[in-house]
Image 1: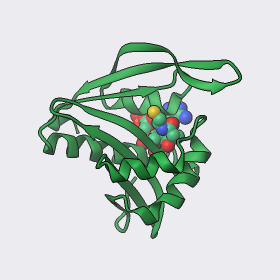
Image 2 (image 1 turned 90 degrees about the horizontal axis):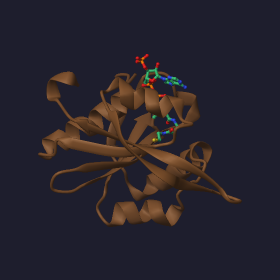
Image 3 (image 1 turned 30 degrees about the vertical axis):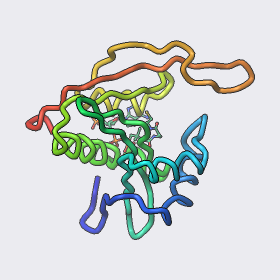
Length: 156
Ligand SMILES: CC(C)(COP(=O)(O)OP(=O)(O)OC[C@H]1O[C@@H](n2cnc3c(N)ncnc32)[C@H](O)[C@@H]1OP(=O)(O)O)[C@@H](O)C(=O)NCCC(=O)NCCS
């Protein structure tokens, strides 16, 4: 759970080293550093979670006219399971509403109980499955569960 001196602020290029460390530690198919930098450069919404002065998590989403697509939300393993993910997702949902968008969509692996628990807690429901969405190499694939939520301010 966010403490007094923790903050969520726009990601800056100097955060990328820590972002990549977390990405590599938590994503079975990590994004490249180039993709991370491109996200910043093309104007995707990129935020960093700073705890005790260190970048310990990040979120990246794309806003279009009617939809927010949450592309990435990750915490340093040391921070997981302590409520930070809930606070970070709540922040993203509020920012999305502030931008005038009320629908959020995302993909999550069926093998990710923490991700599924987080999204379910906020009221997301499964709306589709993308078969073999994640390419884990060596001919191995995993489906993606597509979750969606109509964001309600009074439920945040
Ligand atoms: C997914 C992630 C962002 C969740 O953040 P978090 O800080 O660990 O989650 P929280 O502590 O806020 O917990 C949210 C809810 O999920 C539950 N939960 C957390 N970890 C869980 C786990 N491993 N298994 C089952 N439930 C879990 C909590 O009990 C909590 O529910 P509650 O408030 O009703 O008790 C974080 O674990 C993470 O970065 N994981 C690796 C990256 C990842 O999977 N990102 C999502 C990709 S779609």
